[in-house]
Amino acid sequence: MSPRVRHEQDKEQMKQLILEAAIKITAEIGYEKLSMRKIADVIDYTPTTIYLYYKDKEQIVADIVMIIYQEVILNIQKVLYENEYLPVEAQLKLAFETFIETIVSKPEMGKVIISSGTKTMFNSLEDGKEDHGIGLLQQLLTSAQQQGIFRQLDENIAWMLITALIGFSTHTLESKVYLQENWKQLVHLYTEMLIHGLLAQKEQPLDLDAILDAVKKALIR
Image (cartoon, rainbow, N blue to C red; front, side):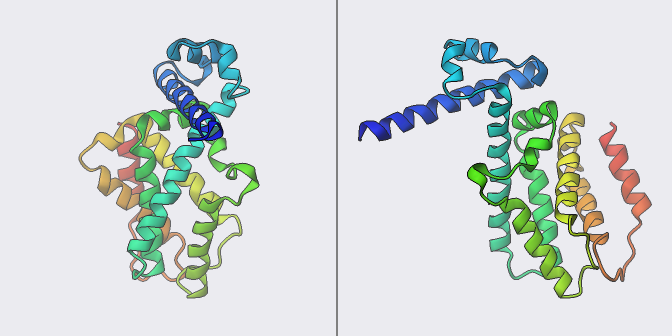
């Protein structure tokens, strides 16, 4: 192994230590009390060492959020590949459910999003690359529109939907609804409601009041 490769491996291992410590601290005492010194204390290094890898805690949290966001995208890509034979609206519903379930499956990382705010979840991938999450969602929405399944949608609908999914996911983590037995049913109802709002023709009207009531009751427990 070349010295350069070894250096890169050591760098990534150190960054992983820093991220794990930041997740632990944020989960225990919150984002506001997270500091470079506290991270250094947890991993038994000096704050100066931490600054060699990250300029501030905001950059650390951005990395944590990007890790879970990229996992969301990979999981959605996988589920869409496995279900490409389904109608586009069914694929989109699966994508919504996968989005929520991926975030909720990482409760400690999810708490970082809750504590620091959700705006970093919307940042593009590093180095100016296109945001693949938005692009993937927009492809499905456009396809459904072209097929006449969805009505004419606002140009910012992909952002609106992701905002709704993040909000639902983080609220679910805060209220610990994901620990309830009817958790999967709640996700089903919520994503069904989102899809219903996009349809061009609603052949079987949903009882939206009942769905909203069920979601609200679960989230405020």
